[in-house]
Each structure stands twice: as structure tokens, then as C-alpha cells.
Figure 1: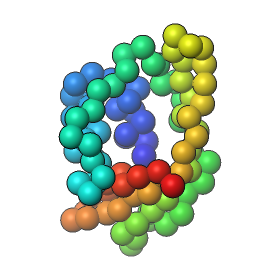
Figure 2 (figure 1 turned 30 degrees about the horizontal axis):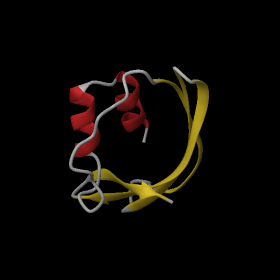
Figure 3 (figure 1 turned 60 degrees about the horizontal axis):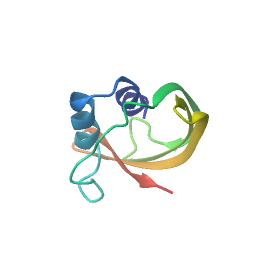
Length: 94
């Protein structure tokens, strides 16, 4: 979760490629364009379920703070992740 937030915060083509690579194939979009006008400022993990070293699934609820042309805001989401072959993948938002 934190690495995906960092990729959004850094932005650019390499980070978009990283986000796609860490997105589960069953829900991954064909392309991803990051908004250069949005500045991701802070990530607060509100809660998590499972996602430990012996789990193959996890849930993360977070608040991502941003600033952009329209002012400041907070994106709140509860995300599902799965681990396959030792790697974690973002699946979707609940």
C-alpha cells in the first residue's frame, strides 16, 4: 500500500508502469495516466486486516491527502490485496 501511494506521489511514466505491475491482472486497466496536477501529500493507514507474513489476502483502509488545482482534499478508500507467488497485488476498492 505504501509503495503504491509513493508511486502516485512521485508520478511519471515509470511510476504508472509500477502501479500497473502491482495491480492484479483480474482488475488491472489496460493503461494508466497519472494526473500531474495532483500532489499527493500524506498517507494515513486507518486500519488493516490480515496481510501479514502468513496471509495471502489483506485489506487496508486509508486516507490519502492531496492538493491540486481545485484545492486540498482527502481520498478515503478500503482496498483489497492478494499475495501470489510472494508478491502483493492491489485488487480493488470495497
